[in-house]
Image 1 (cartoon, rainbow, N blue to C red):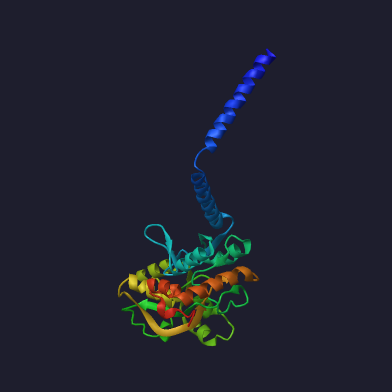
Image 2 (image 1 turned 120 degrees about the vertical axis):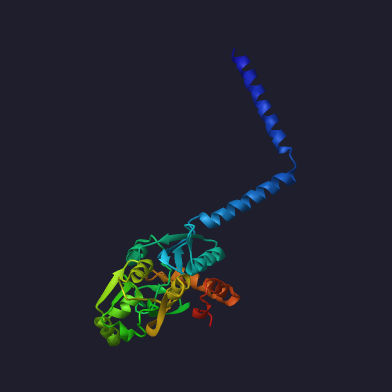
Length: 287
């Protein structure tokens, strides 16, 4: 019985060896080519997914810098810039919509790698590690075209809306070297904070507020999409610049992003993206 079992095992081993030899008899060039292709694909996938994600925190209701379009996609100028930075570094972009007044918690906890969404440097210089400014922006007032309001002085006794934790709010409430704007804000009947500018415009349309204090880039975008119903006052509330904000001390990631943005400015890609979103007049990077 043992001899019969041994014979059967020997036969099975010979069959296995023969089958193995049959597989190696395929053309070597074909096998090598297939292996090289698979290896290259695996390497490319690893470059994109092996921990090399770049998570951008943004306000999903802040067009044209970052917002959700009619198809449910997150789009915008800043998100396009971030996507190009990721492509050039072999990173995977993760778009993370956040509540704007919770942005510091998101950044501090590591949920996001940066805040990139029309983020004002001025007044926050020491709170984050910044890229250089890439857009010149200002805070302005938007009013109804037939409101009779022609200057910021006409806002006395009026109700003004502003986004919570925004630069416009800071411009109207910051007590440091800001006497003119503080006096202006005190002249309002009320300064109302809202969660986002879509809500602000709904309030303005309904007559619940008389004006909105906001970023000029966002204001222009909103006015273009809403026809001639609103106008921007000539008076500038405050001048400011946008940058990409990283957690304080995260210079390594900031330097990589800055280097890539500088390359984009030099080869024209930055301006190409700016023109797509009609922001070319606001660009300061590379000028």
